[in-house]
Length: 200
Image (cartoon, rainbow, N blue to C red):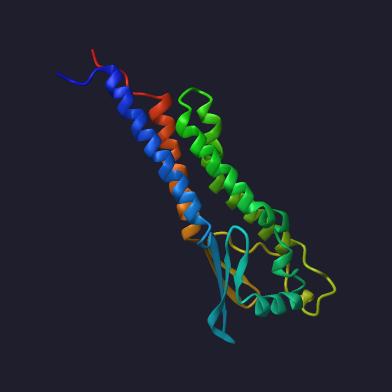
């Protein structure tokens, strides 16, 4: 004899709650890891210059890259996403609270508390692309080397060329953890709102 429909529903809900807690832990952990990184290399920088973007800060060879960017007319890195970085941690706290609330809400309204975590990785990537595009396409025409560099879009993912520099960009562990949280939340939605049909 198999489990009754009620028992199966109870088991699915237990799994869903466990996944929600795991998703919240993954999102919380993502704060401590970079979400994205960029490495640029040129003959004068054989080891490369590196930038790492966390949710609320930018680290790496900032001063050296800002100096190089000044000559081609690009604004300092610290001017990008000021509002996003300021509210990143409070915003993530809201996402975590929403997931934990969803643990105790089983109805259709629980989706409202889960969906933001599903959208979060894409929102981060979209916002990052916006700033890469904005910085690369709006160069200062009065910069010393402005005539030698045409407006460009730094790569969000993969390889790109910035003047004589070769750039390689990729998402990092923090974004990977947010993706894990997204996958877990999608699984929760499937468990709660799309249960398997009972076999006759």
